[in-house]
Length: 321
Image (cartoon, rainbow, N blue to C red; front, side, top):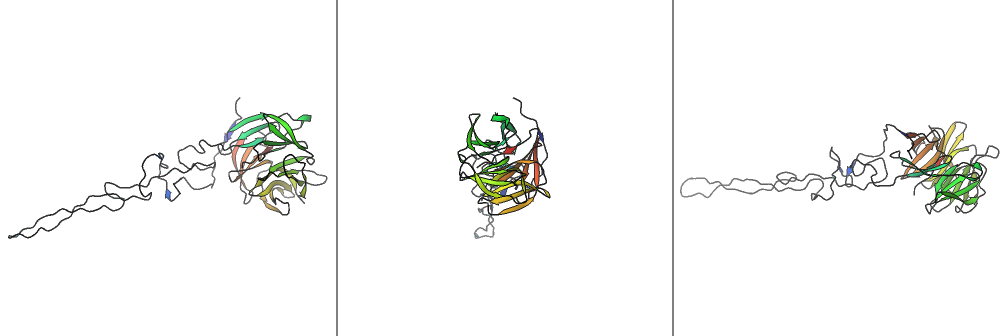
């Protein structure tokens, strides 16, 4: 099956230093990091001592007559000079899921699975937010013509989905009921590292709220209301707090709540509307928009950078542990 078309976009992202050698103490040469770890390395990455040859002049012993003699001496070349000049060599660092090619081999994130799970209304996808590669994992047909609202990954690695007021688990491409009794019109799902499940909903009659359950097999109970905000898309556990998109009098916002529901703070105004999915992965926060865009979200002030434009209307996204 042909993959959805992804529009490549030029990026200017302040996402870390250029490739570095070893522990970063030695900048890479202009043509990139040293690419062969099996080659011998110098004793000192900053310049090994080399052996040099020197000549000296000495005065010979005076003979009975007048005369001068010449002698030869040996000297040592200074560090980095002479025939054995030691040049700094780059030691490839371990590749990690990021926007930086850590080992400088020209293949960023080579050999790594840097994907996150995301959903459209009727399908589950795997998305690499760094490269923009997208693969359809499963088509989902929910009972009662319901559509998928959100997705996250449980602590056992299984994919959880919300549709209607039911929490489903994806098993071998089919859905099984995990829990029932979700609040009316749920639109956000998040799973914490301890297995606790959070669900947000949008309710114009009684107001938006957050509910929580100790695990994915239990019905969630009320945690807190969102006061003057209405949830607008998704929630996610990121850096040990619950982050969510919400709309208020001044437009879409990024909020955070502590996991006990005691404190609510505004991170900032989202400069992109329609963010339906939030994904905490590899130390970063990504946003999935219903117009097909995949964003990098600055968790310090809620500003966004468009990474990729796709033809998929995203409904939600999951995090990576």
